[in-house]
Image 1 (cartoon, rainbow, N blue to C red):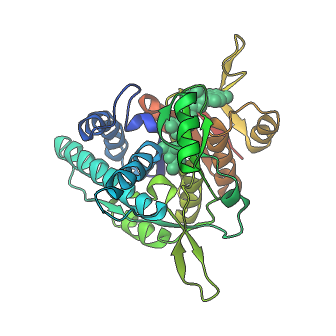
Image 2 (cartoon, helix red, strand yellow):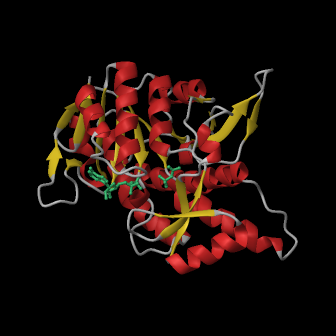
Length: 315
Ligand SMILES: Nc1ncnc2c1ncn2[C@@H]1O[C@H](COP(=O)(O)OP(=O)(O)O)[C@@H](O)[C@H]1O
Ligand SMILES: NC(=O)OP(=O)(O)O
């Protein structure tokens, strides 16, 4: 049996299902089946690093900051809210994985690491917010909120209007080496949640948090690259990447080379803000390492790792 180091990026539906409000119980419930799938990988001898999105959660934490203002509670900036979301989700994932490991009679430690991701302070993304976070609003409500707060709202993939914040490109994961050391020791690590807390370097090489939310798929690719992972797995709510998605001619892609993926990206086959960053993340990882990356649904995780389900991106 091959033992791979695998970075698994969990999509939104691994934590919250459509129609759920986002209570702790909702998130615990969804995470139970997610953890079962991850533990099956561990049973097969793979070493796993788990990363996850935070869009709904960091948006909710921001709203809680604003609600607290009237009670005189100081509001925290977006980087601190990102750190809070790593703690919130890391705790739920870590506990859920722990319980599934106990159920499977596997003795392994699980830890969550508060993780920082270096971005470029000159990244043009800072003046062009694109990352949707928090709840969905109807158009009128979004217009009212925009006028009231000065925040930016956009229509998100036909699902409603959401606040958008800057999303700079992740350059490096500050804690990558310690994550790798822990994984080599057999520890299951939850890291770089929400793409990691965005930080910039000053001329003395110190780091400082900045107000943004990083795309978790692009950050997962950086993490996988820095960890020398054997495989990057991006889990979402579709079984594969499709060409002609949403049209009567749509067809799943079982495998694409980096060159083919680039051609499809240029042709606009993948919606920006959803499938486009996932494919781009895979291209980055495969190009940098010569290894394979795969995009699939949570329920197909075992098949996707084996290369028998989902969409594989290969050199
Ligand atoms: N070409 C495509 N093939 C498959 N899915 C696509 C494509 N283009 C856009 N999508 C959309 O991408 C969505 C997954 O992106 P997103 O919701 O951002 O993922 P997650 O929250 O799981 O990270 C799918 O539900 C699908 O509607
Ligand atoms: N940070 C991030 O990409 O979160 P979502 O996947 O929830 O949008």
